[in-house]
Length: 621
Image (cartoon, rainbow, N blue to C red; front, side, top):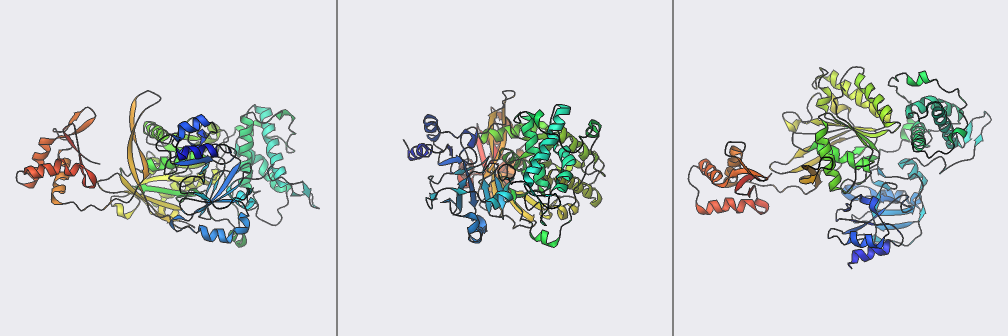
């Protein structure tokens, strides 16, 4: 057996494993969820020729969570480690392929993936994976026992309160709870959920629980003179706890709900629940000291999408911007890395306003290429236009009601608006109007505030792509992140560059390349094709010679003309007609050597600019 098979079998004596390729991508269906300790399955999986690295799930699957320190692209990982050595403590460490570090800890319930803490720190927990240090390019740095996961990092990364970090209930002289505030929060939320289920036979929404319980909780505890949000006991934590309780109730994991004591407050009337809820905002006033103590931004997709932010991704037609937006969205929904960059897993709502057929095919192609099943993924779509540039945001109110009613308490962490132009259509709004663009920005901000989510708008460039986004400059002024995607001429390569990133350093430009994939659509057993984006290098600048220029001109002159033919799966121009067009452009007949140079030299290697299949010529890209 090969070395990687033997190593995988050895590791599997302690942890489940699965194979990855050289780019750290899982190569088996189900991705990291297919990790196993079964020797026969391991031999079969790791015997594949593209099995290069050994993946190991993190979180409950292995009892291990990892803090990933990044030093690539100018990241300040080394400085962060030196500054936070006491926080990291003594635990098992490994060197990564890129020169960073993995700190291994005992898993604490609730730790999940989190990207971009302090701009250089990622957390791998539930829903994540790492490459085991016995893989090529990785190595252990010590043999220490696994330490406890640092609570400070846990509080930034996710909710690690309630039963996991419970406190005894202690009150001050005014009867307000000083210790045990998490238990008080959990008790109030559980009582509200139980009361509602006893009356209605189904769990309430998160908004309902917040409306009924937040003020009661807030008034019952001692603030200790600090910021509740920073202490992990504020409104955001209340919402997270409400959501997890509702999900447990919905899945039947709360036993004897009838025995849960009722809430001390009077139960709300059904009429109050059924009334349409207007969009409400929680406006918080902060002192300068509270602002200084605010944690730095963290990433949903390192280093591109910031948590709880407003971003825009823009590019010219055929720049693959919707493919990139969908790639990010599905990576977040599944909690898988995006091109070796960690993501924060969460529910995604994709407003595919240009129709459902395109996104369905693209999503299925993505799942096929990533060896993942779409069953159970928290990815939701809306395929009808939503007017988001309307005064008072009536369509956004309807959208929030649909989210609350349909998703039943599941809160989207990312909402994608694809495209901005379609969200203006039908409402009489004008992209060039600062007022109308202001309405659009306001709609995005409302969604972001209601769900504590990131909103990503997909947008177009203007006629002059060098001048950036189309429409009113009010959009650029409002977004936290502006990302341009630019296609290199005559290739399928695109450059992704961050032109604006509030409060954090802008990411280095990244090159991706679109690759066509074919698959059999599961719903109708029809063969389909789509594109997927993969990491690539910057295209070599190609200075075309006179003959190359003539060849491209000839192909483009004849494309779509009466001379274009189709043979089987190939479409193009017959070679003789194509060569005659090149001679016409040259102004004289082609010599035999020139014909050979065109039909052979320009179809192979880095100089290739045309394809010839079945006697038909087509442009390479």
